[in-house]
Image (tube, rainbow, N blue to C red; front, top):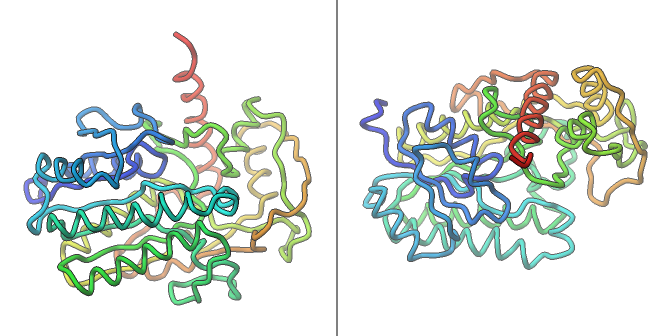
Length: 341
């Protein structure tokens, strides 16, 4: 697909962690791209120069209509990549209505605006949390979806909405269910910038740089080789590349929709990740053993076969030390960005 034939893409939440990496991947590949973000958790600096930026809410139908008109989207042309939403599982348990509002109701408004304008392709940022605590070692897309928290339900409801809307209207969709996203752009153009983030690799790197006194290990009695929880980590740039491939697939076959797991198909325990941070940084992290968090499965590993087969996706950064090194480089840059001039 030449850059002249590539339709415009609106990235919601494009000033956030994963959204900003998708913007970079699209821009690098020559797609016309625009961003909408309310900057509640995103950062204006994460949107690269030359990308149209709209500060506002994805549920603002008047603003969306304006963006579609200005970007040449609609009437069977253009695509939306939808990253905007709330993502903190314990917060979703404490404040479920926030999650059903931000993640489900606002997604409904965004989908409605897309249908009204005739935007034909929609890619949705979903989560492995739709599987809850699975009975299988490696989760595929047909594994029973039974979320155990409002965050997972808020995402699964949006998946359902997309399937129903696609059956009724000329729209196809890609649902990408993320496992544990980590790392940063290899060129250090973007990374995980949220203060107080809960991602293990982010926390570990902050501790290695002296920004935290210790790293909490929540539970050491899981049914895993070393007793700590096992997760499937995927480099954010490999994930962003999967979004671009999904977009190409949706455009190539407008009647096909895709739901795919995004991970590497192998897991690392909390202790293995922290050992790798020690190794990459040549430091020894202080680990604080704490009780289990409610709803944490022993192990959650993807079966990414469908992603590989449907898109020909192959990761470029499937190495834990590389993921940590990129996160570390970004964390150092972030300290410079935040330092007073």
